[in-house]
Length: 260
Image (tube, rainbow, N blue to C red; front, side):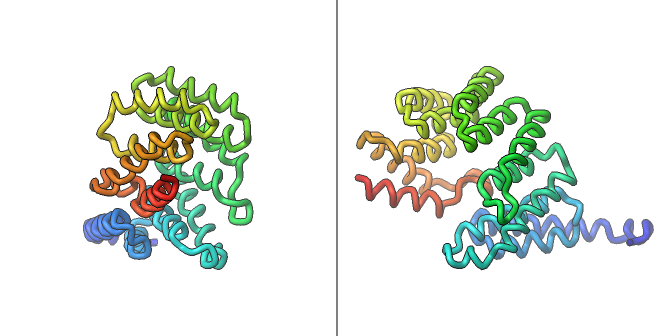
């Protein structure tokens, strides 16, 4: 343990270095160089181990690295998957009100197999933690858990509740629109997406969410529109480091072009 007097002397240096490494990590993450992002976030975390944000972003960078690996390589990278969970858990432990960390941990438990620590039951607990901090986001999180469990009626009810709590919030509108599309209700989904475009038509999140939903539509017109939205996204600078990665949107565009 560093004595208080020594800590005071080196504190400024550590904070400056930590910020520099963290910002470097964000730049690499935005550029989709996830290995370099991981290295930068690890360096930042060494200097500020009790930073919830540093732990969160290290987990995000490792998670993206796994996503970009081939299926064969991922099989040999199970320790990395478990590390993602540990970093997200640490971020939440350090700041229980960090909604981004809670959301990342929720996503891990919903998507990861049990062999690396994924748990649908734990996801529901996390959704309730999110609800305590933000009732709207909590309702959307609960809907994701219910949908994963096949409880579609209850999931729909949570999304309706989120819309009632925040009628003009673009997040619940997109969540309900995407859910309706996954359930095959393209009429309801289309109405919600048109509402989203009217409210915030220049938001890249609206474009990419609609493109994903319309990628499975039977309407050629919608598939063409989805392809146009994906191209528009790829031609636009990402609004934030954690925005939808280009590699996923490129894959989506290839799928759409094959369908045309």
